[in-house]
Length: 321
Image (cartoon, rainbow, N blue to C red):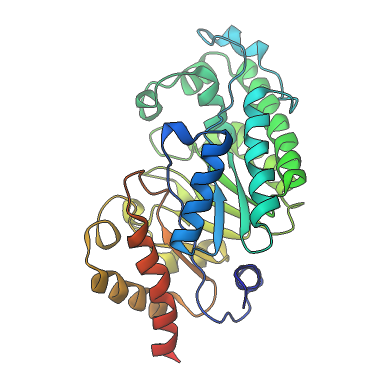
C-alpha cells in the first residue's frame, strides 16, 4: 500500500498492510512561513517516514483589533482570505502539495473557534489556562461574544475551503474549550460546540477526511461527541481515558499511543520504543488505529526517535502475521 492508500483504508475501517503513523512537531520560530517552513516540513516527512504530513499552522488568526473590553469584539469580522497571515499559510500548503502531494497524505491544521478567538486577543499563552479574555468577556457580554464567535467560525469555513483549494486532502481540526476549568457544560454547548460543528461540516468537503484533536487537559471529553470527523485524538496520558474507551465513545478510528512530553518516545531506548509499538499494535490494531502521540511533539524531539517508532510498525506487523 502507498501512504495515501493506507490512511484512506484506515478511515474506511478497512484492512491495512500495516498500522499507519501520524506524528507532528513544532518547528522553530524561523520556520513559520516561506521557504524555511516548506523545507522544515519536507525534512520532517522524509526523515520520519510518517504516513500523514500535518502542515503546522503558526500563522494565527490576527485581526486588526485590540481586544481590551467586551465591546471590542464587535469589530471582529470573518476573514476574507486576503490577509497576509492567511496567504502565508496557503502558500505553504500549495507548495508542499505541488511537490509532495503524490506521496504525502496532507492535512491542513485549522485552529478551532475558541483557539482562534484566544489568538485574536494576542495574549500570551500563559493566560490560556486561566483568566483568558474570551471566557471572561463572554460572561460579561454573552450576546456580543456570541456574534464574534460566529464571525470567527464563518471565517474558518472560508479558510477550510481555501486550504482544500490549495491542495490539502484532509483537515486537522484542533478543538479547544471543553476543559472543565474553562466553560460550564452549558456554556460550551451553546457558544462553542455549534460553531465548531459549522467548521467541521465544511471540512467534509476535504477528500481525505478530518482528524479531530481535542486539545488540553481535564476535558469533558463527552462534549465532543457528535462532532463530524473521521479520526479522533486527545491527550490519553492526561485524561485517563484509554484509546479503547475513546474509540467506543466516538465510534471512530483513534490516533495516539505515545505521550508527547515524557515516557518511552521521549526518553526510551530504541528497543523500548520498538517494544511499545509492538504492544500498541497488538492492543489496538489491526484496524481503526493510527500510531501517534497525545499532541504535537516539542521542537527538540529527535527525528530519529520518531523514525524508530514508524519503522517498528513494519516489524510489529511481521511479528503479528
